[in-house]
Length: 275
Image (tube, rainbow, N blue to C red):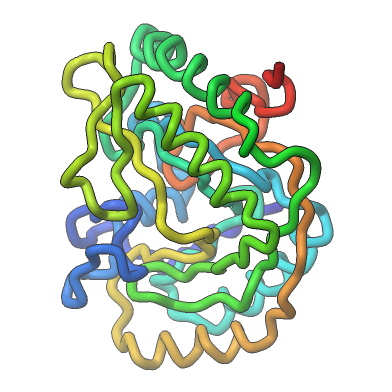
């Protein structure tokens, strides 16, 4: 999908807030919606490898029918919102099953990437081998999007409970490997895996199933007006069911999944690694 340049996006904005800000997980209601990383993404100035995350995702890339419906929605939303809004390209849409290392932890050189990959591959394989890991195709239902502070998101119905099952298996495998995942925004018990290089964060399991569709380059002049415009366009979205058959682990070397679905980013596939 072609990514438009949003000439109205501000490049001087408030300090960066984590990817969880804006939809009810520790967000400060008075924090600026503006995000300098988003401002760079919007004008094509985000540098690959300045930041890098490790994430397990599913439904990425999205099916063609979802991308076609989303492109229409995206065009309408971009036209309706102020210039400070950045509506993600369809190629970024995904569901995060788990974050192994948030990109906000900084860049990763090749040595660190290989070290973490070596550490995590047996943990993922162990989770995949569990009897509770979902087998075959499962269903997610994409609901109407909502603007929840600094982010616009699609919430998903985990129709078959498969995402919950994956997260349960991953949680168990992490415990066996000497770590403990943060749950949503609760980091009180979180611990990195045994053998994790010093200074690296603990993994995190989200408490929702969602895709982000929008963030902000800068603070909109009127938040209420922006939300009203978002809600009008959101009403046109027709909920869709999608079929998913695998999860993948990827290097997120450009923030918010502005990466290509290729071998340079995908380093584990649940269906290729199954025993």
